[in-house]
Length: 300
Image (cartoon, rainbow, N blue to C red):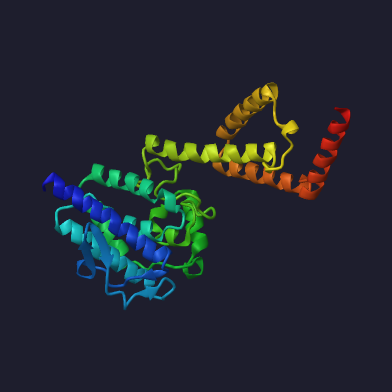
């Protein structure tokens, strides 16, 4: 395939899968008949047509229709020789995932498509996985899952892999079923290094580092207090205090870095709770600042 044609197909593929995600999350719809016959390409943009048969995302068959849409899209590109795409399961999970922020969609696709390019054509195992997923029942809620307690126990014992649980991304739960997911399953760091959905450590490191930095900023915000516009200039840190605060920030960073993610999140929550309990009402704070200014004026 010519390089220019390959790049064009990749651009079209990225745009199309993002449109599918937007239809599901923003319009709360599933096209239910998406194929090359219902997509127009004009001035290097895609336009989705024939949406009269679209269903709401809470329709009883919405997930089955979406899976069919994902299959049609994948087959279109495969037939044109563009095989470095997401598997049927990966594309479906990307569309339904609630843990990918809008600003991180492109980053997620960069990582996922890079992995797809590295693996090349789908091997027989992935073909089998997609065939199974195409026919499987996908629970919309945990109430529709039979024997969920048994799933949880099997995963804790290591006798079952959550890759086999097709409701994981739809329901937005962690790979170990321990609670609500905050990171897409495709990017989660698991203890099972042999899991086929794990990323290499260099790819995970940047994502984890951003989380750690954000947690550190949350803690420092709670320590530093509110940044009201009317804060008394006399209360700003001098050079010595600023140096001490920076050293404290480094210690906070080291401490958070040594924590497990769950413990780190709990620490941030505790800090915020303590701040709420001891927070000075804004009216009292302003009154104290006014009195302080008057006293300094008299001394001058």
